[in-house]
Length: 300
Length: 334
Image (cartoon, rainbow over all chains, first blue to last red):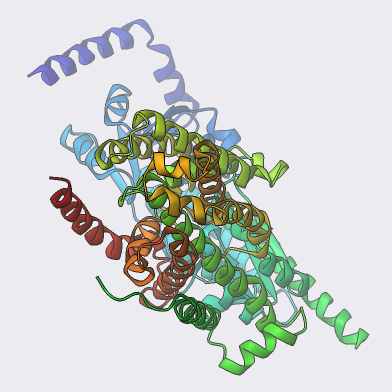
């Protein structure tokens, strides 16, 4: 009952606003020959949909992104995200923003999403990506949701071309281990594993038969002695035991013999075309391993 | 109850048990390393060899800390029970471990440890000292079981809440999850630097308690008699309070709070040493070490991939024991 009153009030307010400021709508309609059925006030509630939406949306189409999107420790597009209104994933605030499309991830709070759907908002959900093909599907989905399929195709074409180029990089494959906070690693069936593969690296977690995100005991990592150890570097200003393992003398000793690559956590979180830069850096780290080994070979 | 075993024989058996478990702990781990390989690597490996690295930098500190933390908990449990003449006294139940955790949490998550590594044990043991003093104050100087345990419960829940608050305020998303470690304890992936950091403090605490044997024996005859025997009660109190707080504080700062070891062990040993507190000290230290090593071996064997916490196992043994003890104490009190 109250809700209906509220929406009636909003409808009235909407009419009032439309009457008093008719210009912006007309101006944007004139500025490009946009599809009139395309959503015009889009809200994204998930760090990863935030970033895909920022890349694909037409100017003015995206209204709000989640507050995580402007956190440089998690987001690759923190600077761009500041241009949008932040939301905190709460049904109430999203409701008040009156969106005509809501983008959510599979991990976005279920109760919030259910409530927004119940209130009649169009919601598009993006499944979690475990591979490049999942990523492709989500980019296409985003292009369709925003009525910008040509922009999505453009991003995909560039990603595929860059990836093909990187795959041609010379040099032998090397073994690598991903070592996250709390001794976690990424095994079979993870996006991180695909990233390593694309960079010409063989993931030792796969050799250990680990799948998904799994514990890699420090002992096993030391024994496996991969050519490259990839750790992440986030939250250095706020220490936690989770990162203490990076300072463990055994890991330090391993890094004296293996090569070491640091990569910020935000680069691994979301499946976006930004992954290309990560793959490029890892591929360069692989090339550097080659030279270290050659040097030690010539010394012996 | 039972006939006391000859004291030297008991010490020899317990020492042998600790040495055996120390060895088993060194041989237990996710990396499958052969028996002789691991021992050779431990004694005479080259420092860049992977097996040597695993043995010296990962398993050795873990086994050493298992012995030292367990001994600290067993010893202080025996000292507290003897001094307070209270069968329920124990660092965990009196809030000493929880407060030490709070001190360690403040040192680690504010980043103080990075600047000043020594702040970790020092802040933990300072918080532990405050906890002992507050518990004594809350219990009103009386050492009856109920008021002491209530004071301990109050301090434990307060310290636990403050620990949770400090961890929740950290901008690091991992911090909030680490409350489990600080409340239940673990020795996973500790290093020799933790041994060097906390070990000396634990030794100092042990030393302070070790010289209390005669005084604790005298105290069993009552405070007045002890005084007439020339025991200075203020000195005894200071040594128990500071010895306990220093050794448990330092232990907790590198292992998290591990409950019930200090409670169970003195009760298991008491029938074997004929209820003499002085003899209870060394035997409790040794069996505390044996118990903690066993728990630490078990967590690696039961659930090698899930980083099971030590406190879970010690509580599985300790909590039913605690209930039994309460029932028994109530019967004798009423």
